Image (tube, rainbow, N blue to C red; front, side, top):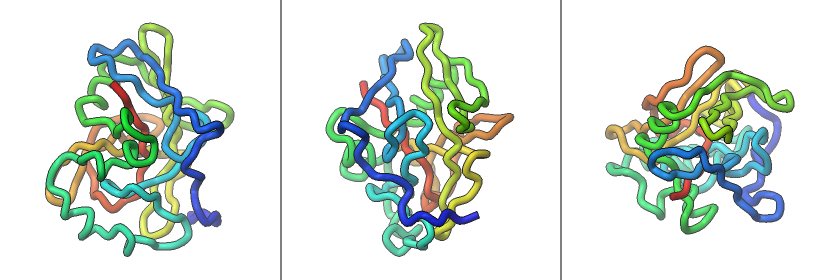
Length: 192
């Protein structure tokens, strides 16, 4: 079902402060508390094509602004000028790598749950801290699909001529996998 709103969210959080969570991970990576375009952990935020630094507009097929052919010209892990987190949140923030998603899954327990009525996956570390990924769905051809039942989050890691790595989940599974770069997925920034 397509959303009727013109844009998913604004790009600037309330007060302009981006909060990170220390999950005690071996790498020292800190995960943002919420998505780009969100103002809380249960806010879905904006959805981006891989390598795009502007979000998709729901209800309008703006794939001409970021077509699959443009997405497929990038044949490497994203550089800072191609990374939505670095461009929109500033130096020190970036999209996670595939290895950082793998580390998150290996060093936390996770569960499908609802927080304030929003479905998603909650990743809890041994230090008691957690991050919540809302099931934001995805954008394809201007339509918002599977909101509330699926979540997809881009990494900055290259996979193939037309694919990139992501974290995907629903109520009974979570996996680090690949998909076509033109889909509009969420972005959860990280910092060292």
